[in-house]
Length: 115
Image 1 (tube, rainbow, N blue to C red):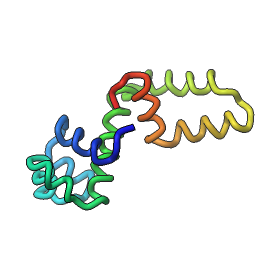
Image 2: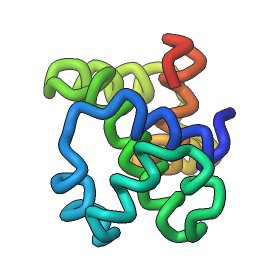
Image 3: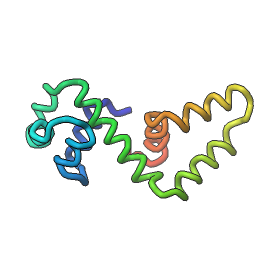
C-alpha cells in the first residue's frame, strides 16, 4: 500500500492536469502546488492536509483510469455483487468496498499493480 506522500509525489510527477487545475480542485495555492511539483523536498515539508488532498486526487485518477467508463464501473459492481455472499457480513463488505475510494484503489492495485 502506498503512503499518502508516495501518492502525492506520483500524482505530481505523472499529472495530466495543470497546476492551476490542481489548485482549483484542492484549494491549495497554485504557487504551493508549483513548488511541490518542482522541488520534491518542498513536498516533504508540506502540510499534511495538502499532501492528503493530493493523495486523494491520485486515488481519484487511479479509479478513473481503471474504472472510468460506465461499463467498467458497472462490471466492477456486478463482480462485487456476484462474488461476495449476500449474508450480513457480505452486505457490510460490499458496502465498504463500493463506498470507500481507498478500498477500491487497493483492489485495483492488487489486480493491475498500478496503484
